[in-house]
Length: 108
Image 1 (spheres, rainbow, N blue to C red):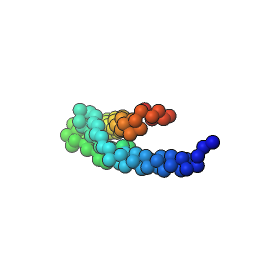
Image 2: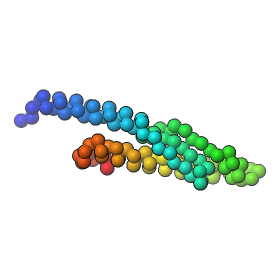
Image 3: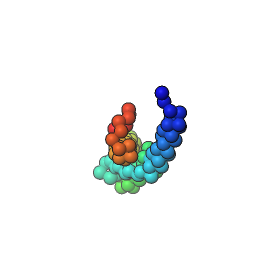
Image 4: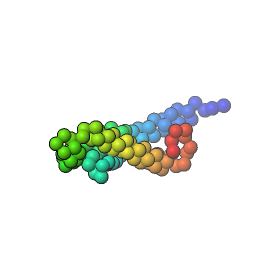
């Protein structure tokens, strides 16, 4: 038979862990770039973009008189996707440390 007090304690611990994870997600910051640094993005662990930096030379140099907007768009997408992967990796590493090797579905 399951002790109701233990269930309550476990739910409280799970809630505290969730709060800690959310705090860490907000504090984790990753940066990724594409096009040799032409586009750099900064993202937090919640996969929210914090900053996008586009080197002005990249805009001018992409197409001479007429900038290649499509290429610039591709560079932004590539940098954002790379930052998302880095955020996932950082959070997996952090969560594995917090959970002390506990195997949970979808984590690690």
